[in-house]
Image (cartoon, rainbow, N blue to C red; front, side, top):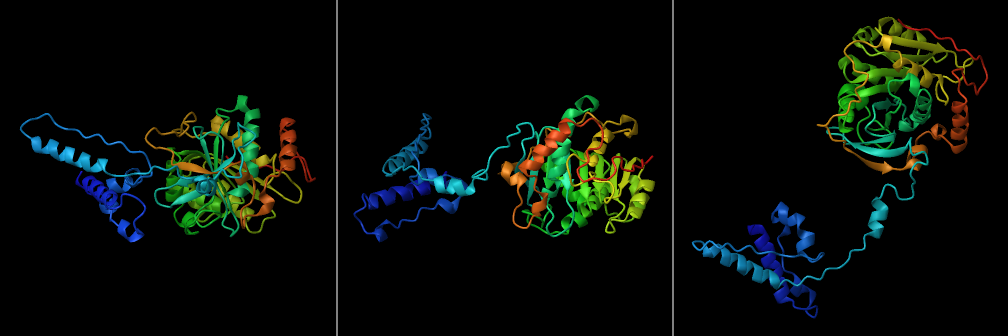
Amino acid sequence: MKYIQKVCTALAKKSKKVPNDSKPAKDKLVHVPYRDSVLTRLMQSSLGGHSRTWMLACVSPYQKRPDEGLRSLALARRVRTVQAKPAAQNRAIELKINDPMHGDVDDFDVALDRRAIWIETTKWGDIFARAAGNSSDPLLLYVHGSGPRNSSLEWNWLVFDIALRAQMMAKNLKTSKFYHVALDCPGYGRSEGDRQTIRSYPRAFLCDVIKSLGKKHAFGLFGCSQGACAVLNAAVEDSKISSYVSVYHPVGHDVKRYTRIVQPTLLVFDTEDAGHPVSVGRLMKRYLPCSHYFEFTASKHSGWVDCSPSQMALKFLEMIGDKAKFPRGNNLDDTGNSIRLPECARVGGGFNCWRYAHNREVKDWELTEEEEKYYRDNIRSFDGSFVNRGGGEQNPRAIWGG
């Protein structure tokens, strides 16, 4: 209270000393101690004349302490002498600059609701992400590879594919609606931070992101290349981080540890990709307790990854519909939502921010309007057979793990 009294007294002196604007500017320099307390600093805009302010003086009728009532009346009298000139502040320019939706649009597909968000983590700062779907639905979290231009944009094809195809296969799935969140890991895309974070602390980072999204755990974790390695390592360290794991072009280290991964795990390998040798994939298949393993040859079998419709999306949805391969102790019905964990995410942009490349992001990963129309037409006519865009055999070789 004493700090508010000091501020009000200073404002009264300032008004008494300068009753109008006819005095020189130097006569108006009366220090108002707004910064002496947090309360007065917060009330600066209200007390300083930028708003219309009312003061109520409470006088106690208790006769044994009349001094308190007199002091309140004295303060109220001083405050009455404060001359404030409320004025409407023109913040249009500021709002235009700070509004993440300025120049952007909402997704025309209301059910998909593709947009950009900022996730406010507790330890790793603000993390940029591309999101789709309702945040109350089960979480599918996507982690990109370690290339210098890699980002959340590289997952747009799979997010779009799973979202649309799940609607078609709803009768065969326990859940057909998901909350898709593709991350820009620290140091990549629009997220600041150390690029080694996702390699060195995969479990700690992903758990922080999941909790910041208001979830106890994810429904599914997706990874590519080094992102796949991070996802698998996180699953090794924490069996409850997600219900499913899906990776393609994965990198793995000491794959014997993967015996600790209890989740059903989808692995997709290209036999012609020397940077992600299929021999490592076959070792993973050997040690994973519940693997759904596929390998294909890119020159012969198109349509597995980096396109939509894709075989990877189909195999993931088939995997989550296969209850026989689901380990005990996991709850298919659990969305992961937690009443104790608030969702710490804010708007980062609209549909254009989700669709288009930013700065050094790979432009080839953009999902154009023409491609989206083509994909929608093919998905609608999808009858369970392989949709082939680039030629090659219609039935890629598939090897199931046991």
